Structure formats: C-alpha cells, structure tokens
Image (cartoon, rainbow, N blue to C red; front, side, top):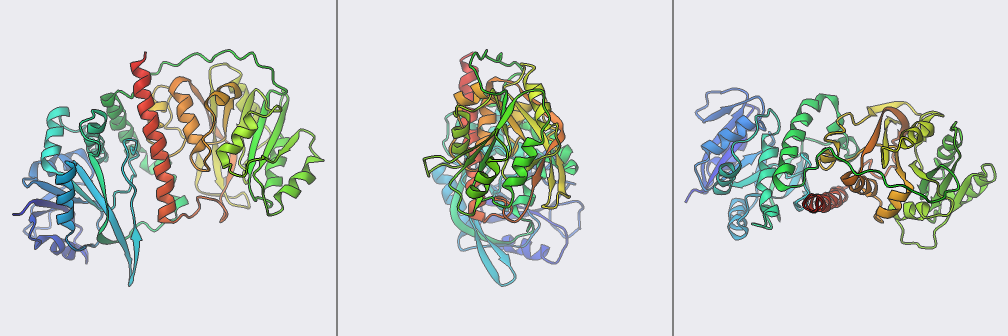
Length: 493
C-alpha cells in the first residue's frame, strides 16, 4: 500500500532528476510533487511558488497530500534514503501518534561520510532555525485536524512551515500528546551539506538586515502561538521593588576569566578608562587559570586599587557560577555590568550610559549593542549587533524565539541575587534575562558601546555538531522552562 506523498524542491539542476528518482519508484510512495519557481513541463504536478516555506505553498501541500503521510524535502540537494527509511518513519509515526517526525542523517562530502545527529525536539524548541535535517515527515490526518482546530495558516511569505510545526506542538501544552514532534535517533538518509559556514558565522542570521522581512513574520506567528498556549505576556510590567541594601559602590564590572592571559589586561584597562559621575569597581573571578592569567591579574591589581581578584574555593564552577561568586561578594555594587575577558568597552562612556538608564528606576536590567571586531579591532561581519527587533511591547515574548539578547548586559544586584545564574558556561545570560523579562522591563541601548572580539580561541567560533546540539538543547531547555513558567504566571494573575 502506497502511504506517502513526497514534495521535492526542483531547480532543473544536475541532481534534480536523481532526487526525483530516489522517491518516485519507492513502493511506499504514492506520488511525487515538485516545488519550484516555475513549471518545467516535465509531467510532474508542480506547486509554483517563490518560497517553499510560504503559507500559500504549505496550504497547497496539505491540499494535495491525499495519502496517509506526506514528506517535505526542505533542501534542494541530493538525498539518498538509507535502508527502510520510509518504513521507519511510518512505524514511529504510528507508535507515537506523532504529527511531525525527523531523523539523524549522514553528511556527504565527496567520498567522505560524516554523522550528523540532530537534537530532540522540546516544547521550547521554538526558534525558526531548528535543524530538522532535510526530511520532514508529516501525518496527513494530524495536520488536517490541526487546520480544523486552528483554521488556515497566517498569510506569510516565509513563515508557513514554521507556523505549522509550532501549531503541531500545541498538543504538548494541551496534554494530548507528549511527543507531537518526534526525532527518530537513527540515520535514515544521507545528504550533501550546502551550508558549510562555521558555527559562529550562523549565530547571527536572525539579525542580518536581509532577513528582516522573514524575521517580522516569524515574530508574528510565534506571538500567535504564545497566545494559543497561554504563554503570551502583555506589555504590563511589575514595578521595580525598592532596595534598601547598602552597597560599597554604585556599579561593579564583573569579568569571569579562565586562561585569557593575552586578553585580560586589555579588558581591565577598558574598565578603568571609564569616566563616570559615580563610584565603581571591578571584580574579576579567576576560575583557576593555568596559563599565567592568575599571575597577570596579581600584577595588574597593584596598578588598580579598585580591582578585586577573586579565586573561588570551588573548582566546579562554570561562567554562571563565577557570576554568582561576584554578585554575592561584599565588594559588589548596586548594579553589576558584564564584560567578557576577551572583549572591551568601546569608549570611556559605556558605564555611564548603562547606569544612567538603570538609575531611571524603570528597568531591572539594561542591554546594550556591540560591534563584532577581530583581534586588531577591525570590524568583521556581521558588524553591529543592536537587536532592533526588540520592542517594549513584544520584546520579552520574541526573546523566547531568538538566540540571544545582546551585550553588554547589566542588572540590578538585588534582582539578580534573587534569580541567580545557572552554573553553566553557555546560555547563562540568556536564562537570567528571560526570567527577568517575565516580570520586569528591560532597557535597551541601540548604539554600539561594546567591542566583541572574535578569534580562534572563542568558545563558539567553531563547534562540532555534537557540541552545537548540546548548546542548542540547553537553550531550548531554558525556553521550555520559561514558557511553562509564563503559563503559570498568567494563570496566577
């Protein structure tokens, strides 16, 4: 019995016919339908569209999917099915009653084959660039039921597929199905990888101006999704609680450091070049460096009496744990301001601009904008990261979807002491900012006041597939928790 309709992007290139043939003669495939920007008149039914991800295209796919399941190939590249791949998709779909399934795969590069595991889908896996691989396997019945429940997709040019998979995941929040979107942890196909950029180069796609129109659509459908599950927050914020604590200074710059002997001096000097009308100091939390950083800090401390060099007793701390050491230190000021050990403040006014905004009493945290530079401080792509997608009305909702909130980050010490940082070295800042934004307003500075130096020693410059998955999974875990907390928060009002 033929159970699957396959939808393939078609560009009339060398691999295009091979891609068609990979599915056309499979005993489980009922028919192959092409997705293209024109009809090539090759005898196949073709959905003509400028974007295979538009809502119009996705609606047409659902309309033409007459079999039990349909498969969308999302990349115009050669795909090779591995042994009994479609059979495994069908088997898992039936067992788990899943709406959408995807699997691990192999990357092909000439004669070389490498594994490409993908991560499990969580309720908080809401970023539009989640890597499903190139094969998305849908239950036709479940998709049709979803359209009946929620109506047609919003009219978008880029966000149709994104909206569909968000809507399919609603079953989790309705407690109807624990795994409506399911990863099969098996290598069911092989593909030629077309996006070979380093991990660090992909991180900022969502702030690239050329992607702005798509990002607006993603935000609209994501906000609609949050309303459907009860996690949307209206633009009404709690008042900043009064703080009667006594602090030694107005502001403290916090620098966690581990083995940055070549950059730590520059970072500290950029702190003490600051010109302010208030008192400040700097706490450097040295996480047991072994490359000479500790000795360098002892040397610098003689030059700057307001520099406090701390070495934690614990040897199990990550960046978040080092932050906790600083914010609970007796020398910590009323506000704490972030500076990474290989970055710099862009000029002598950075600290003043941040504290001025915090002093208005409106904000629990303030986040600035930064410029990407190399080690010679020359601008490199993508240049200035200002997060202008943030709005006071919807920024904290959209923050759940995007990959970061910007830098430098500054917090009211009283509030960040209440929340505390998770003891991790990736996403710790994102986690606390999401939690702060649930209740309080976050202020923004849209001019670049910080230099983010990219070099080969950066932790996210180039990650393995497994490490990238681990990072993304952690952030999706944070998103899941925050979405569930916001649902509870709304119910408690």
